Image 1 (spheres, helix red, strand yellow):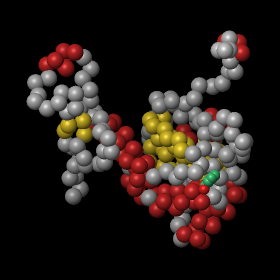
Image 2 (cartoon, helix red, strand yellow):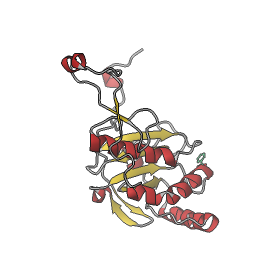
Image 3 (spheres, helix red, strand yellow):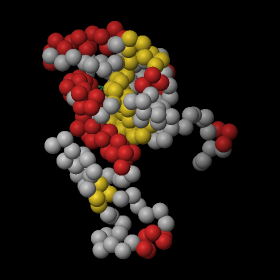
Length: 222
Ligand code: BEZ
């Protein structure tokens, strides 16, 4: 039976692409931070279920090693979990000792779950308060442009995170859309026609609804 409106529990709408990323102020392993201070830069805000766990460790090592690639794309990494600042600091130190890697991004503590709840990083009906493996791509205006959510048991691909970031920036700068598996330098696509006249006027012998063009930056810097 569908519950009547007055019996439906009231819950906030989940965040969607195009929403303003909820601002927050928090303690991190690199001092206090306020998300709004990152305006003008891209932010990859990513949660992990728990410190001192294997998949999360593999992600932190890989993301730290790729730090320069994110910087080159004007993107700051910001990690978050419900663990305490002291747990984060201990884990980062252990990562340095065992892997020789310096975690070069702030790790936010969220013991009160306020941030995790605002972002929907905490699974409803979860047996504990661990955050999911959520990732938010936030643009320089503070707008959520893409989201990924993986279970605790599956690590993210740093290569894919960089690819999505580059694709978002390509779409913004060149007014194009990117095909399946696009990587910087690959051909891009013209956006779909927006009206019938343009579609009917298309005098091209290529497939009118899948028109490629070279990436303007292809070969740049080679
Ligand atoms: C991990 O990061 O390895 C992990 C964390 C929570 C549950 C399962 C795996």
